[in-house]
Amino acid sequence: MIPTLLFALLALLQQPNWTLGGSSSGAYTLVSTRGFALDRNGATITLRSDTASASSSGSITGSVPADRFRRRRVRIIADIEVKNAVGGASPWLRVDGKSGSLGSDYGTDNAVKGTSTGHREITLYVPAAATRIGFGLLLTGPGEATAKGLRIEAQPMSDVNAPLAPPAQQTLDSAIAIVRAQSLWRDTVTWSQVLPEVRAATAGAQSASEVHPAITMLLGRLGDHHSFIMKPQATRQFQTGGTQNPRPVVQASSDSVGYISVPAYSGAERQAMLAYAKDVQDSLASTLPRAGCKWVVDLRRNGGGNMWPMLGGLRPFLGEVGLGSFVSATGSAPLWHASAVDVKPTPALAALDSAYVAVLTGPRTASSGEAVTISFRGRPRTRSFGLPTAGLSTANQGFMLPDGSMILLTVSVEADRTGRRYGEKIDPDEVIPDGSPGTDVQLDGAKAWLKSQPACKQ
Image (cartoon, rainbow, N blue to C red):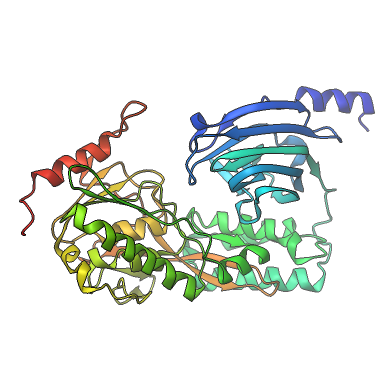
């Protein structure tokens, strides 16, 4: 037994030094921190931004050695208060090993949004190979977020042979069966090693939610960096949502170059997707007289989601031809089209089919954002600029689990209309590094190429 005083001292020595992180940490301020995440009362930390874009994110980050937590389910708990939080805030948890992440959950599927409060918990299993546990508070977009009572708790180590309650067993068995039958990379997994680890991580689980961390670990072992589990509430939101997605920014510059920035899209409700595509096309139609035949399509902040409404909105540029395909272990599927969300462009938009288009990409262009990038590959009068994409140019398919959660499983790689396969980062035609703060040299380079092209026909 470790004496109580000594245990408290060990915990104190392992308290994290809080740091700023996230995709746009420079736009965020670490307002205050007090207390300890390993103490029973937890820590209180506050993060704020007045300038971040809706798709930016910042985090307060801490980490501790994984030694005391191995072979246990670990939970982060916090009461979240937000003010004017457009994208929302959540606690987050990540387990790292020597070669990278062994599992993570950033809580974005159940973030606290607007001006409100909410209690949030996230649980992950810490395998024997874990070296550190990272955790903290994530804020997406502008606003202010405070996590109160943020603390780490470890459940007792279970007997690896402890039985699971039926709902937990059914959800786990279903997930394993789906992954073994459908994953693109299923033949690269040493199942005789992975399955015992996964089952040990669920020993004694009494509810379906308790096996979610093990399913996350299972998906991580595939090595595709794209598969994930969507919990029941987030699954319902995805199936019925879509109306809250930010619309693209469509405008014309003073030098008569059109510009459209397409953000990520989440949701699968058909009427919302149709409304989104129509709204984008209407914005293009109202801007076209001031922009002519030269356009920038900016995908640098498109983190993915559902590709079909994005393509539906961009259909005036992409036309009716096949744009790309999904290549699974059994071969290629038919070419995809921009008409899956079927909003037919009006005759007023006909000129965009032959417009000059400069596509901007970067490391935050991911998943379905990369599918949109691929859809422009092989299009005449098109050139891409910026930096390579995130490297998730693979396709996920949704598989429902008995508890209402859903596995988004990587089942294919993406190929362009010429048959070229990707699956990793997509390099732009012209690499342009980021410029100094306050400048946009990538946009400048794209516009310079557009201006060098022949004048539009009257």
